[in-house]
Length: 76
Image (tube, rainbow, N blue to C red; front, side, top):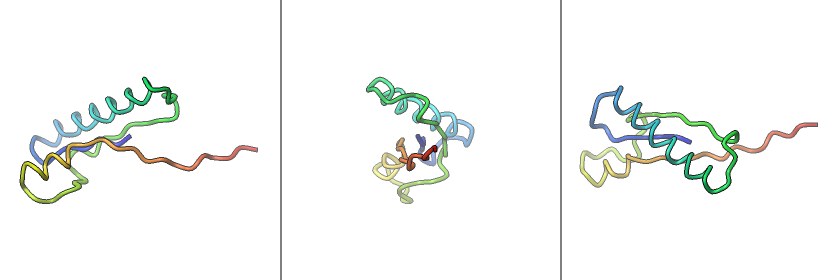
C-alpha cells in the first residue's frame, strides 16, 4: 500500500502523512477480510505526484493511497 501527498508541507510531514494514509487504507482492507500479512505500507510523500499542476484540483489528485497487486509466489 503506497501513501502519497501533495507538494505542500515539509518533507518530514509529508512522509508521515503518506504513511498514515497508507496505513488507513490497509486497515480498511483488513477490516474487509484481507489478511494483514499479505500487505505492506510505504510512503512516498510528495515524491511521485500524479498531477504536476499547482492547483487545488491537482493537489487533491496527489493526496492518495493505492495498492499494487504482485503475483503470488509458487512454493513446491
